[in-house]
Length: 56
Image (tube, rainbow, N blue to C red; front, side, top):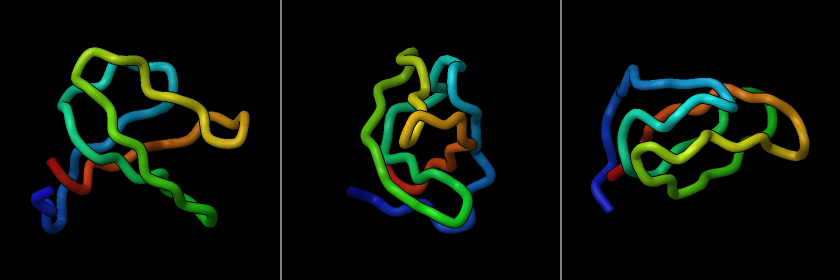
């Protein structure tokens, strides 16, 4: 895995993923998921969240 320093790539739940990689949820509670380009960005704990690309 290659970390991406200071990336500005982010997207909301329900939209197609713009780039394959490791995504981290933004907010108080964080998790990471591996998503392939074109997949729909998931909810986290049943809630819509914003995701930030952190690695490829």
